[in-house]
Length: 449
Image (cartoon, rainbow, N blue to C red; front, side, top):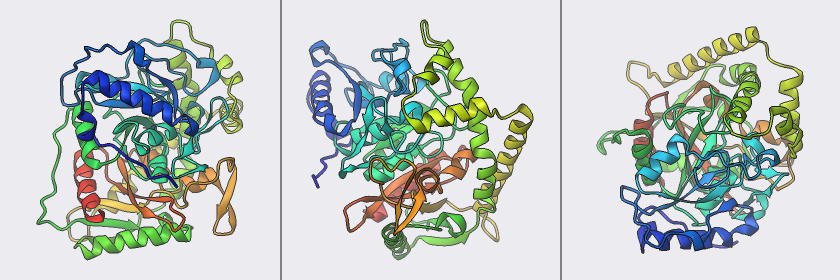
């Protein structure tokens, strides 16, 4: 297993901006065998006088290829959009460029961001840098690998049901899902669900995520006084069920470390979280995708029709999901009922954060994914301690309910298994409390290091 030499933003500042971008492009091509990038800047066309200013001056970043950038194509990982050039930056990209960041390339993903393995039949799979026979996770697999291999210190991805946190956990890095809308809306995004989609970040450290959040959201960072004890809620029912033994062991060690450092762990229950998510999560996406994708295509000067896009989908699971959405549409009445169920789910999360006797938890804490990165090709089922389990449902067991409810969350690395595969630990709070969440994540990261 190769040693991964990661960057943080401070280490990415050496040399001129042009030299940094040229070096990052070379590093991007060096990980071609992992299927990381779909487009990389041409070093020959980098302006040698490039001298951006700002908090991220000259820092190279990677962008998931369903997020529009003015200077590179956006394929969404699907053939119908191959070579498509929208000629615009998504809000998050524009804010990062405004702070001096430079985009080195667009990263590979699960086709149309509609899955969690990044086994893309149109452009090839994204391979895990810790074991190239395994999945990098998805759908933001390429962005996670770009950070994990040190191509860039930070990368943009998207998250609908776990698509930032799953690859973060599988690749051993930090993944941040903001509150929906905090990092921009649907404009300039090949999205799935206006209710659930959000652009977010992958990075080596929480500190770098905090800096990006300041730039993109324009928000001041929060702090947690070192004298104050953290109180984290442990939602045992549902979130600690069916864990692979090596995942359970790694998470158990991490929680023991936090307790030894003075963190107060409180057992809580997000009542009916998984039941409510099962009833409303997917129907919301299936209803909205029939509007979200056509709206994006309609914003292009010469884009394909929705029918042409669906016809060109190469990944069987993605084609099946879209054909299900089209062939068995969720009615307006059923959609409205699902939105009401979502409100019940949000109320369950709010109640779980309340402490007996007053006060509120700092965050919920749980394993990001119940199993380690599955072997490439395990698209339907995979082995979990000798039992075949569904890949999709098992992978998003813990990330799905909060995504449906609109919770912000961070996945932190919390060690590796005896086989050397990373395990992730998630922290999750209530909508709009992102700054506080990141402050808590930074403290937990320090305690686990």
